[in-house]
Amino acid sequence: MENQVRFYGRGREFFGIWIVNLLLSIVTLGVYSAWAKVRTKKYFYGNTDLAGDRFDYHAKPMQILKGRIVAMLGVIAWLVSNSFFPVFSLVLFLAFMLVMPWLVHGNTRFDARVTSYRNVHFDFVGTLKGAYGVFLGWPLLCYLLIGLCFFFTTSVGMSYPIGGVVLGLLTFVLGFVLYAWISAQVASYFINGYRYGDRAFSGEVELKVYIKTYLLGGLLGIGICVVWLILGVVFGGASLLAELDAVGQISDQGPSIGMIVIMMATYAGMVLTMLVVMGFVQARLRNYLFGKIKSDGEPEYGLGSRMTTWGLVSLMVTNFLLTVVTLGFARPWVKVRTARYIADVTVVNGDLDKLVVEGNDADTDSAVADEVANAFDLNIGIG
Image (cartoon, rainbow, N blue to C red; front, top):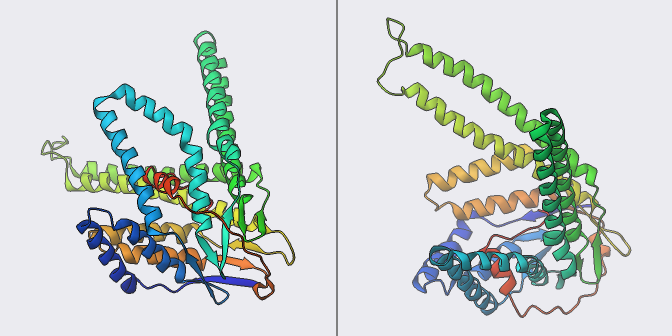
């Protein structure tokens, strides 16, 4: 049995909440932003429906405010030290890298514990040790290995150029595989860490799927670039010929409108290419990962995703254009459109009328890790 997730929020309705939140945050010099976040989360969670029941958000504004104060102090310390004490900023950077796994772990756990469905809270029980492994330990070892390979390749290449080229290609392949492996480990850490009440989620993530997806994404990007290159040569050549004067010399009046248009089109094409590749990779991996997630116990439940590359890319492009054209005032509609799209491509498989689950009491006293992670853009997940 397939249960479609639905989102019933409306842009005009959320605009009223958004503009009040914005004005009060400005008037209170940012203090009200904690209450604004809770109001926003409650609106979006409360308008997300699954099998006739809505989600809820339970964080307290004071929790958010305390976390934001700590996050703000951290950002200020970073900016000041980076401007006046470069050596100290390096120390702060190293300290930040050391606590980064703790921040991601705390952020994920907090967000899960303040979310509920049918009065039962979610939870995240992934270990802090596991977080340090996938976010710091293994990446550092991989970087060290690639660095050693690069050093060895350079040394060999100075004496044997062909051997250096071969080793360089092998190093690139190794780096590609290691990146895919780390990405798969991160996804596995999240998937196998979530719980809903007393039901644990689990799923086996295969490395070959990540390798294939990244490889196809790279080939897609190369193919699109080739198309753009051909179009650039054709139209660029035509524009250049149009600038030739009667004696066959190129006009020295500066770049023509045609050339300016071509340069702008080239830049837009590069951005669009990146969006298409990112959309392809994100959609393919999300669909795969959601299809692997299962709950324990009987009956078994699972997730499903029907995200498409075209749907995701068109959403990103139109949201960007709406934001630019309206000078940011379409932000409420952008958030609502995004939430509706995510809901429309997400399903839960299983008869939810037969769902029996016991809740648990989870501590959510501190939002420090959550807010610091948000301040430094460390929101990592599986989509």
